[in-house]
Length: 213
Length: 213
DNA sequence: CTAAAAACTGATCGTGCGATCAAAAATTTC
DNA sequence: GAAATTTTTGATCGCACGATCAGTTTTTAG
Image (cartoon, rainbow over all chains, first blue to last red):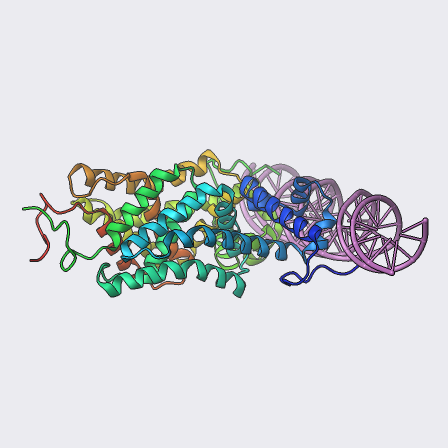
C-alpha cells in the first residue's frame, strides 16, 4: 500500500489515479458551487462521486490538499480560457475590454468554476488560512490585468489612477458574475462600459469624441 | 427561570440584560473581525467576554440569533455614520462622492464592524442561508446608493449605466476597504475618482471641463 | 495461475461544535 | 432577612467532521 499523498508530484501517475483525481476534483467543484463551501464535506464529495470516503484520503493528503488542487485546476482552466482571448490585443483599451469580456465569458462557459473559487477564497480568508501558494495564484490572476493597466497608462490611453486599486475593483466586479445571478452577456457589456469610462484619459492626444459644443 | 430567548422584543429589558447583550454582541464583532468567522465559536466569544458559554444561550436563542443581532447592530451603526454625511448633498455627484467617502470613513472609524459584516455575509452565502431579513438589510444599504444614482441619471449628471450593476460594483469596492489593509484616506480618494469618471455624463449640458484643443 | 501491488471499503477514532440543564450564586422583592 | 427571581456556572449531550486503518477486492506482472 504505497502512499499517494505526495500531491504535486507530476511524475508517473497511473491511468486510474489520474481519472480518480480528476473525478474527485470535478465533484468537489460541483459540490462547492451548488451547496456552498460551508455545506460541503469530504463525505458529501465522496457520495457525489459514488466512492467511499477513504478514496479521497488515498489520493489526497487531506481536505486542505484537495482544495488546493481544486484551486489550481480552476486557475489553470480560467487562464487557458482568458489568455488567448486577450493575447495580442493591441491598444490597452482593447486588451482591457477583452479581459473583462473573457473573464465574464469564463463564468458563462464554466458556471461552477468561478463560483467555487470565490467561495473557497472567501472561506479561507474567513479561516485566516491564506498560504503563499494561495497568494501566488491570486497574483497570477491579477498580474495579467495589472500589466494591461500599466501599459495603458504608459501609452497615455489611460488616466493616472492607482493600478493596484483599479485591479482590485475590476476583479471584484468580475467575481460578482459568479455570485449574483446575472445574464453574462449584458453584464459583461455593463462592466466593459463602466471600466472603459473609469480608465480612459480625459481626451487630448487621443483622437475621437472630444465633447460637443 | 424565565426564558430570554424572545430576541427582537423591544419591551422591558433589565439594565443587566441590555449590558450583557451589548457586551456579547461587541465581543462577537471583535472575535469575527480578528479571528475570522470560520474560526469563531460561541465558546471563544464567551471566553473573550469572560463569561461562561451558557450566558450566551441565556440571552440569545442560538448562534443564528446572535449573528443576526450582530448584523443589525453593524447596519444600524453604519447607517448612523453614513446617512448624516450624505443627507442634503445637492448635486447627485456630490452625494455619490460623499457616500463613498463616508462609507470608507466608517471602516476607519469602526475598523472591526464592516470587516465582521463582510465575513458574515460571505459565510452565510457559503452556507446558503440568506434569510429575508438578511436580504432586507442588504437592500437598505444598497437603497441609499441606488437613489443617488437614479437621481443623478434623472438630472442628466450621470450617463446611462444600469443602476443595479453600478450599485453592486460600488458596494463591492467599498467592502474592499474592510478586507484589504489599505489607508482609508487615499483609498477613498481613489474610489471617488474611479466612480466619478465611471458615472459622469459625456459632457454637454453640464458646464466644466470640456476637453482641450 | 499465482503472487504482489494497487485500489477501495466502511467502521471507527478523536475533536470541537452548538445546545442543554441542574445546581449555585447574585439580585430583587416584600 | 427570607423568599422569590434573575443570572451565572460548568459539566454534559448528541452530532458531524476529517482522518485513520485493518481488511477486502481488483488489477497488474511474472
